[in-house]
Amino acid sequence: MNRSSSSRRGGITLLEVVLSLALAAIAIALLTQLVSIGNRAATVARNSAKAQLIAASIMAEIMAGIIPPQTTSGVYEQDPMWSYDVVVGIGATQTINIIGVSVTQNIDTSKPMTFSLTQWQALPPEPEEEVTDDTSGASI
Image (cartoon, rainbow, N blue to C red; front, side):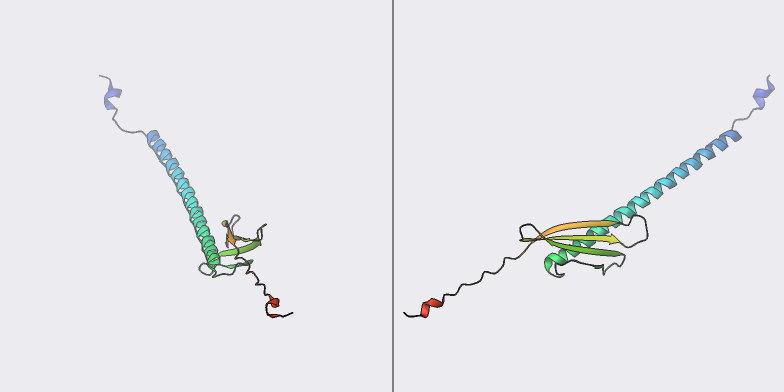
């Protein structure tokens, strides 16, 4: 009887344990990177949606007449981390206002979130002047 074959027990070797731990460490490192990338993408999406909502809110206030349609800038009152710029110009036909709203996030990063929205607003027609006829009561 061969003694070496009968005394050998079944199980895993130290090399197999080390390799499985190395693979597990690599998998955990990759998953951590994926979670970090997903977190950054979610932050960008959240900030982009917030910038769009703020710009739409300011534009709606201008269109409703709550804010006068004039060039201005300021900090958004409901969230001071955001500032806005409003630019108003007159169209080529002199019958429309071109209103632009830009929203910027006030944070110290290399790429703060910005969003711009442009909309046209019809100007009200000028009132026509009435022509009075002074010759109706004169006699010759």
